[in-house]
Structures are given as C-alpha cells and as structure tokens.
Amino acid sequence: MPLNDDQNSDSDSSRLSESTASSSDSEYSRQSFNSDSSSKPSSPASASPPKIITFDELMAAARNLTDLTLAHEIAVNANFCIKHEDFPRNSFAGTVKQIVHKAFWDHLESELNEDPPEYEHAIKLFEEIKEILLSFLTPGANRIQNQICEVLDTDLIRQQAEHNAVDIHGLANYIINTMGKLCAPIRDNDIKQLKATDNIVELLRQIFHVLDLMKVDMANYTIQNLRPYLQRNLVDYERTKFQEILEETPSALDLTTEWIKESIEDELSSISDESSSSPGADSKPVISPTLVLNNGYLKLLQWDYRKTIPETLITDEVRLQELREKLNQLKIIACVCLITNNMVGAAIVDVPDFADQLKRISVPLLEGMNKKTFDLKEALNAIGVQICSKVNRSLTERGLPTLNAEMQSNLMGQIAHIVEENNPVSSLIDKRIQFFMRSLLALPSFQKCMPSMPGGLSVIQTEMEFVGSQYASIVNFNKQVYGPFYANILRKLLFPEAPMGKAETPTN
Figure 1 (cartoon, rainbow, N blue to C red):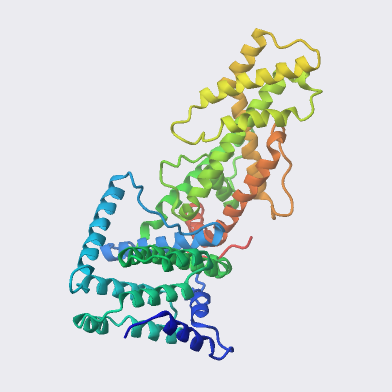
Figure 2 (cartoon, rainbow, N blue to C red):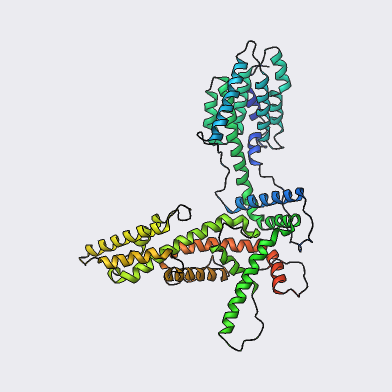
C-alpha cells in the first residue's frame, strides 16, 4: 500500500491522541535505556586451587575484564563517550571501503533503473533498516514496534515488487519520519537534509549514515543514564567482576602479588638499614601492611609502563601513566626554578612573581615530553636560553648590569644537566615530590586538607595539589575495591604461618 505524507500525518495525530498519562513510544525508548542488571555485593573468596584453563574459560575471563574496564571508565571518566569514527579517506582501508561502497550503490542504482525495476537488493536494505530501527526501541514500545514491522514487512514488499507496485519513496519517507521520532535533537538537521534528498539511491545511502550516527547517540545516551548507577555500585561491581576473573584464571593475581612482594622487600631493606645504624635492635621487624601498600602505590608514579602493570590496577593504567608524566613535567619545572633562584636569586629577588614567569617559559617547551620523539635535552637548552634572556631583560629594565657570558653559560649548563642520571637537583626535587605524595596517602581525608608543601615545590604547589588529589582518589578507590584481595596476599607474605581465613573488606 503506497505511503504518503498525509498518511504519516494521520499516524502522528493518532499517536499524539493517546492518553497523556503514559509517555510516547519515542520518549520511552530514549528514557528506558538504562535497564541493567544489578550486581550483588560479594567478597572475594580465597584463591581457587590450580586447574587447567580451557579456551572458553579464558575467553570468559577476557570478557569479564572488558566489562570491568568499561564499567570503571564510564563511572570515573565523566567525559567518556563513544565516537563515530571512520577510516581516513587517504588510507588503504578507507580507499578500499570507498571503492566497495561505490560499487554497491552503483549496482543498486542500475537495478532500480531497469524496466521493470529490480527490487531485491533494496528490499534487503529495508530489512536491515527495520532491524536497526527496532534496536532503538525498548520492550515497552509495543505500538511503534508493531507499526515498523507492519510498514517494513519485507514479505509484503516483495509481493508488491512482483506486481511492480512498490512505493519506494513512500517507504523511505516513513523511515525518515520514524528516525525523526527516535533520534536525538542533535540529529534534527540531518533528518531535514534527508527530507531534501530526491535521488532514492543517495537517500538510502544517507539514511544508513544517519542511522550509524543514531547508534552512537543511543549508546552514549545509555552510558549517560548508566553512569549514576555504576558510580553508586562500582565498588561491589568491580570486586564481583574481578572475583569472576580470578575463578576463571587463578593466575590473575600473580603480578599483583609480585608488586606487593617487592614493596615488602623494600620495606625490610629500609628497616635493615635503620637497624644497622642503631646497634642493639635485634627484635624481629614489624611491617605495617598499610605502609607496604602505600609504598607500592608510590612505585606506580615511577613505573615503567612498557611492562605490565599489576592486574588490580589495569582499569586505571592510563590515568596513572598520565599522572606520572605530569609529575615528571612538574619536577623539571621545579628544578629549573630552583637552579635559577640559587644562581641569580639576588638579581631577581625584587621582581614580583618571577617564579611564575619562569614556569610560563618552561611549560610550553615541555609539552609532549612523554612522546618518544621528544628531545628533553634540546628543550632544556631552549628553556635556559629564554631564562637568561628574561633575567637580562629584567635587569636592564631596572638599570642593572646584565649577566656576563660565564654566568649565562653556567646557568644554561646546570639547567641542561637536569636530564642526567643522579643529578643532585633532580634527585632532591624527586624526593620531595615523593614525600608529598606519601604524606597525602597517610592523611585520613585528603579532601579536607592537604599536607604542607615541601621546600622548593611552592612554584608548582597548585599543580601538585591537583595531581595529588587525583592520585589519592585513584588509590583510595582501588583500596576499597581490591582491599580483600590485598589482605589475603599480605597475610600470606607477612604471616605465612597464620591460618588462612576468609578475606574481610578493610575499613579505612
């Protein structure tokens, strides 16, 4: 039966005349996309006995890890969303896709231009469009679901094609109107452009393009609605998911165990050094599990991210790596300011906010220092040149003699030497950054107060406190989720003679 705009208008009128007590189908389909089965809280059991892992079990563990990582990212990253991406046109994959698509649409056009037209490929497209439209609906949208199935009934369309009675433009108009009811407001302009397209083949091609965009919109709408639920239940959800991974793959805590073991060895070595400097202390050293864990977390700020991170920290690997890179940049800036102040402090002591000026010089030249192609020594040379110029300009403005060539060379040389291993200034600033971060982890509540900033870091205090709060948030959440697993590992390593019991969630 041919379809036209009048019939669509009648359909819309009947749709709007229903009881206002219930939401419209399109609204319902958008608002009810947050149905997700809740995860019941569970505490991790003790490690399963060794067993042979089948391929299916391994794949199940991989799926659990994917689910866990995705849920964590949605909950903690407010900017997380799915983006519609395509192959670059000049890439090999993009060129192949373009050629294949052009061949398909050219073939479809030639079929529809035959006398009589050949509709089989077009009917398959309508079938695919129907399935996509139905995928946007929720179980409660029964009426619009029935309407889509009725209008895009491929068996009926095929019968009409046998009698050359298919109203292909009418079907396309119905599809566009239905898309308009289901799409996000951001797609309204795309829908208008579809209505202005006359060529049926180009219209179908653009319909699929807009449907792809709508799929992304719907996925992001789902993420947006799911986020508050995940944020409320993320600790239990992540712990349950990781327990499932552990049951499928008993070795899923090997790297974490090794990470904690190294931290224990470092703590024992530190205690041994203290004992050797204090004769008479023969008692067995007492190691704090909290201190062991905190020292382990501090290692992540100097971690070589080319090697695998402990399993319990995979979900935050990117964020931890970004924090490490930011701290490296801040360390360089603090070193530059300390060296400059020590060498020419008397010349700039009366210049207000000179440290901030040095920071503004350094930051742009250190952008991208985490990239493999970045030349830190070259950047430090450029910073040294600009700082000498800045100092001389300041001295000239106040009628004072500028730095002589020897002082400039010495200043630039010391700044360039920051990059060298065991550089005393770099080592000093690094220890003070580590001290601040360790103090931050020891606080009962970092949101209420920050530890005092060590000397030499005042120029980067604002940035340090921001990075520190992000770092402490990651650590505290990680402890909440994986505390029971860490407790079992620590009990085995620190008290191997003690009987093993069920892990209990530690209280902070």
